Image (cartoon, rainbow, N blue to C red; front, side, top):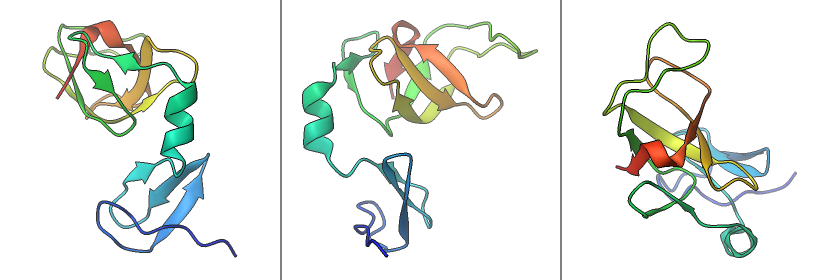
Length: 113
């Protein structure tokens, strides 16, 4: 049985692997074990102000956005927590808002929180 490292956020050992990421079952924090090799091959993803974004960051929506398949728009100031970068695409991120799950958003409409 493989052993996984302790969570860097809560320091507990209750962690497991999910799609190449290490996940803490207690606090829900997710991270990639080989951070150095992943960042060396990927393009830097930046928000509307030029700040670099990484997996697990929180971002804020800078304008109202219509969401396909949802009856409500994503309002300006909505917080998107624990984002995931889309592999091979530096213009999009994946995340969830409080009311809408499974969002894919363009980085030009987001700023780092």
